[in-house]
Image (cartoon, rainbow over all chains, first blue to last red; front, side, top):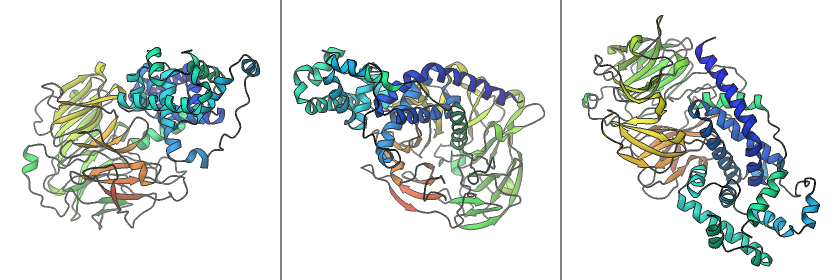
Length: 188
Length: 368
């Protein structure tokens, strides 16, 4: 066995450990990006494939996580852009079967959040990515910019536009949703 | 209330379930893509490894050295189109028969440098003159070329040599020079070639070596700890990706002296610089292919050309490049498609014309 082959085998072991450790978290992000469990798995599979393809150049596991998240977001955006979202994959007509306790959560008064979730699914992909990165992954604007491959100013505008759309889509919830600028202020 | 959005996201994130991944498929497909990215050409769906590699780094040389002073004497100029299939190489449409099937192809201004399936390296001119140049360690990379030179890692009994040859006259007058094994570290790979200067990576880090001054030892540009990600080298500058391709890229002097001259906002991992380093054909960390204007950040997306995997592979003047769409299993994408695209002065729409050669098919080999 050559040293090159040994090196590739060792890399595969490290990559496998990375997948085992980080795929649950990455899957949750993927699910928020696409709103469908099957698509989320497809998205994660694709993102990890891209990550492994670049593994020889990544090396640092911390960079691998950033790389995988970038692959997730760009693949999601790309799927929308190429319209394969609807043409190659079944559209999400019905919501996923809720997890145990879902009805209880509704009963506890989280209907507003369910509406918010559905409105989130209607956001344009880049706005949705920006919102998920900022408010679920807790990435800074600079970190979100790196993940999205865009300028910080673009992140600001995408988040602002996304939050504005959420407010417009949920007029009844106006009182419970802060203005975009206020929300961003409060979340800093 | 500030938690409404966060709560909603966290609430639904928990509905994602547990990952059900096919790790074997990830490793297999990822490896295949990595090889394709490195220039391996898979000859037909389902064929196992009739693959070889050729350099993507073919950049018109504006580096002010002696290479530039050499007038072109061949019928081939840097603006022309080269491809190969079987044992024929086409120089701008004119076929030239060569000994042995072509496995990979590199293009200079004067000659074609190609490898055979058994890793022989040969050069051939448009007139059909062939020179044997030795062997390449194709596991360690492939033949890379500039307008005036070709370089490759050559296996020896003691280890790997770096071999560089000037190709500024004709294929019959080639005189390869070698950086011997003792001066080459483990796992060497030619990353880029700017004129006669090779950018090399081995276990020590990223090094440069000027084949025009073969008595000099390689210069360590960045040690391994820096993990410098080289995008390309051109006109005396090296473009390095930031943070594994996710951060800003930086131009630095190829000579190793002086500080970074310019930082560009958008990150990428690999690319091909145009003659004046204002544009780069980019392969981004997420497989995105396109042109990045390094002066203003403008992005021109080759995805819009309609194929799922399109890569710009050669600048033929400051604003015009060749792009190849690889065959895929998608409907209507079973053959290569080659286009000549011009970057507009403004806007983001590439102006492209189809220049796909008649000798098309999965066995088509392009100089990348």
